[in-house]
Every structure is written in structure tokens, then in C-alpha cells.
Amino acid sequence: MKKELMDILACPVCRGELELSVEDENEKEIVTGSLYCPKCNEHYPIVDTIPNLLPPDQCP
Ligand SMILES: [Zn+2]
Image 1: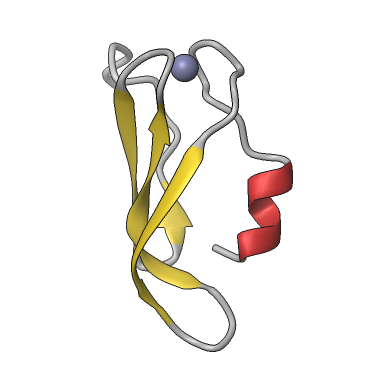
Image 2: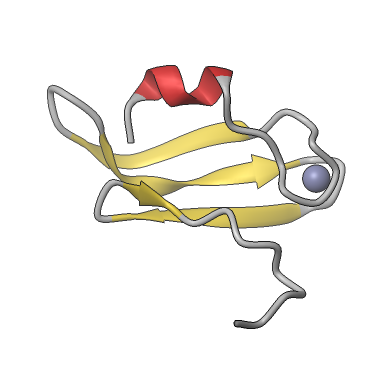
């Protein structure tokens, strides 16, 4: 995901702001990392550039 996406991404549970932590990135975007919601104490993984913002208590 591109870093600019942080402007529009929000926690799916509380709609609060997310904190980004980057593990791996290339010149264009973040490849691996996580998004963290301090209100919900919940981490959302970024895998292969795709942020997974599914609420943790909603199993598909
Ligand atoms: Zn939240």
C-alpha cells in the first residue's frame, strides 16, 4: 500500500486513526508491516502490499 493511503484508512471497528509500522518497503509502497489502532489495541497486517482491515471478530 502507498503511504498516502494512511490519510484515508481508518480502524474498521472504531473509525479511529491507525499507526503505521513498516517492516519492508520498496521505492513505491509498503510491502510488509502493520497498522495499529491504539484505541482497540488491535493490529491489522499489511501483507504483499495489501492492508487487511477486516475487523478481527468478523470471520468470513
Ligand atoms: Zn479501533
